[in-house]
Length: 170
Image 1 (cartoon, rainbow, N blue to C red):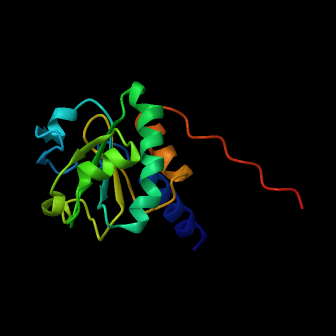
Image 2: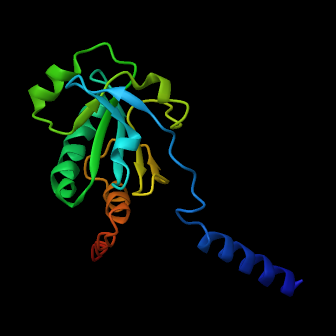
């Protein structure tokens, strides 16, 4: 019985360790129009990590998250991170919204068709795709300071995760 437990543990550890970019699923391809009126495809971004945030101007959780997305764009864009905000279920004016808040990341319009392919149950949903086009992370957060999100971005760029904060003394 003890041997079976150890073998099960070894199999579990090996399967966890063997999960990498080559076994992760490829991200679904897409082509959408940007706010600038240009066509943008995921294949255009090949060789660079991509942070995609599915959002809408009416979404209160997106309003909370987007300052953090802009911060990541400013911080990691020079290192190759491509940030694309993909509008879904949109009935507002994304161009006016971006201008009003001073956001500078790329916005792709009408991403409703991608919702199923990217497992988007609602807004905001974030997908991080690595340099080879494989899924790296899939997150649902509205925290603009999410360390989980920033760590996903950092590891997709080949950087170490953020140092853990020490627990407060009691």
